[in-house]
View 1: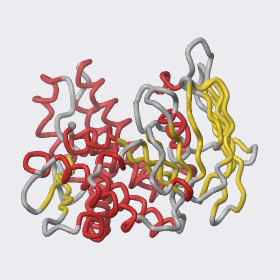
View 2: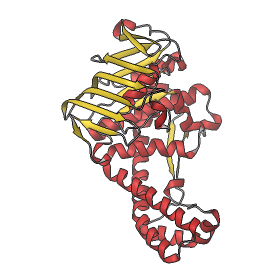
View 3: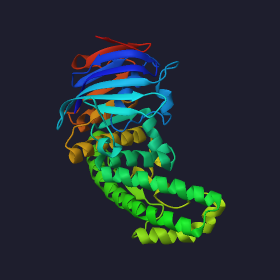
View 4: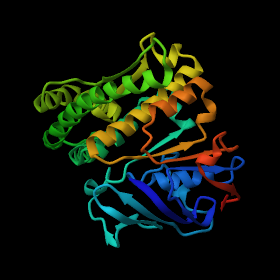
Amino acid sequence: MRFSKVRLQDFRNIEFAELDLSADRIFLCGPNGQGKSNLLEGLGLVTALRSFRTQDLGALRRQESAGYRAFYEIEHESCGRVELEVQASSGPRSVLIDREKVRKMSDYIGRFPVVPLSSGDLMLLRGSPSERRRFMDLTLASLDGAYYLALRNYHKGVAERNRLLRQGGSDGELDAFEAEMAPHAHRLQLHRSAGVKALQVVLERVYRALADHEEGPELSYAANAELEGADHYREMWGRQRERDRIMGATQKGPHRDDFRLGLCLGSAREYGSDGQQRGLIVALRVAQAELFQERLAVKPVLLVDDVLGELDPKRRAGFWKACPGSFQIIASGTVFPEDSEAWKRYSVAAGGFELG
């Protein structure tokens, strides 16, 4: 897929902007803090209505505004030309595809795959397990609506079990919720195990093209409780119940999973150089994009938020070698690239965008 037009209103520092994006390579250039990342963030909403920069969705609306609106024209492999609109105000967000309201997120998520690359991606190495779970959850939910439903239902179950633990719920009440949670927990475990293996295969190929080093990437699933079936989850939560009552929260389950990412020389977080870490994260994002293309039969759009300048020349050249040339790339930076003639260029200042 590819964007052909975007229109943002009251989004971050952008009061109103309309850009023609009908090109393979688009570059947004300007000083920091002018709105380049904001526009990329607005484009990134189309995959799952989430920001790649913050979990506080209230921060997306411009100050003094009641909400924001985003409109996109998209050329899509299976849908043809599509008009997509996202509206957000004080109530729930709404999404319209060709003016028809989307009723179920499970039918929407992943239909319009966009992959962001930003300096914040280093948190996938340096941050908490929740950062890595969020990455894998979005990846797998985009590939399979069944994963999204299992994830949503499991987290609802955990929240209700935690409420019962804190409020002195009976064993019978907890038994009932644990019986509902267990199949979802096991389903998440199976999806995550298979998904990590599939992503690892693509990551190895991408990293070789990008880094051209002897070390190789390692991605593995570190399940908090690797169990053989739903009944085993029920038994585990039964054994944990008294401890969980004391803690007031469910201590074991897929919501505590982690995913290990590193190099064959050891954990990149502990031993990799800064350049190796940045190269590994870029390779992971390109691998995510290639997996989307492979499984969804849709070419994702890459949003490259001022990260290529952080790579050394060898890895920067490797990025272009590893990145499929058929992907639309919308990038940002403080200076235009050396081959700027190959890009459609916008100058950015104070939330405004000028072509040329």
